Length: 619
Image (tube, rainbow, N blue to C red; front, side, top):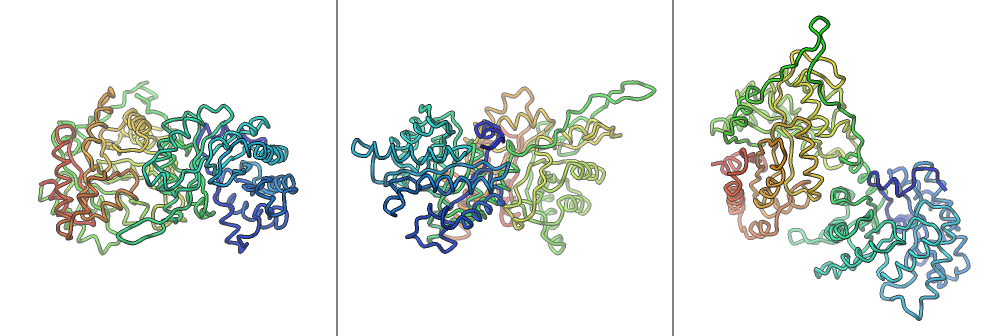
């Protein structure tokens, strides 16, 4: 048995990532379907070890043994009923050898019954004996936990859990949702969660198989709402989905990882993969999840001191510049004057600068207050946001708000950029944690994330009060206007509210929301955040949709964005490109008018670089 932190303690501290499909990997190695896959632990141990090794190298923190069907009832048709103990012990031994000191080994045990069968008086004794035989061998071989997975009969799952508990095993009980019931709008997972939550033989609840990542999202929500136990989601790689009249199989590592992150945001304590997932899926998920707030351990930044020491004068108060005097944009926010902003992506190359600057001048001449500049949006590479910002201000005389992303620089680099940007005249900032590299064009790039948005906000606040990250004096202090992001439709709203308040405590002076497509959602968010003792101005993000496909993409693939069904239906009814743009502008204006009395202003994105569309929303 491993001497590492006990599994339940570990999953309680931060989410864990399980491995992917064993069966899929075996099949990809050219093993025919008529072979007993569990027996390969005895006949082809090198093959099984190699698969475990690939998952460990991919970053999986838990690997499952190749014993899903290694019970007497499943092995007897192969003539292998007398090999139960040998197979299970060999499987644990192979996994343990590849796991090393840091990776947990999870014994896998699937149902004894077929999906259509149910536990009853006629089969209960045989099922009980089969589980006891298999789980005893797994327990004796030494695992960190056991996964009872892909069960469709609750009674059978609970029977297996009672036996596992009797053997002293940490028990992870995972249920398979019938895809047909999910498609009919039924919610069997609610009953499952309630039953398993009350079962004292079960430590961790899970959903696995049956559904792809997207289809598992809502069932997982329902399970999380009905249990206080840790929950693990292990979907299949994906399945068919109709997109633009075509049936596409959404099963790429990117698609899997997008939802793995969302599962963690919902509150899942672990994710992994079932049928169709490979080390490529797990590798990408590990890299993305490891940088998430609540998972990544950030560098601690202490709050600024309120005074500095002078050898002759003793304690000297550090005078921070008031918000209203930091910039013209800051003065408007401080005075409660409505502000407007247009978000424009920095150009990809120098050749794109002339057109970019022409669009900036157009915004300036139409009375827009600032240009908002994303920093490596969706982990793509463009001209440096700081160089773009400095060029913009120099060539047009207009203020801008460069985003500053924690993904790409370490603590030293971030501090140097803030100091350098301030010295170059960049007065307004929007601090964000940033998308992980896997979302963009360079999935092999690494994310640094020494700090998240809260830590970097505190660092900027310290610089404004005359101290750097090490507590050394900065004389004179900077006077940056510190902005932060907010998501009114976050899937885990309690966490979002908590982080929003933490950003205010760290020194945030204003916030800009993600694009909102439902006025009521933003108003609900404002109702909650306005209860904080220190309220900051909130600028509403708006995005004029230009087509149904654009709306669908925003809803499914842009983190932090939710497009309601009603909006999707309106965009789906547009028959021409012009009609789509007109409808998108109208929707954005409607939301603008509904929230205008509650926000400090509006930031409008320029879809596909079309500044006229953004300006039409503000007209």
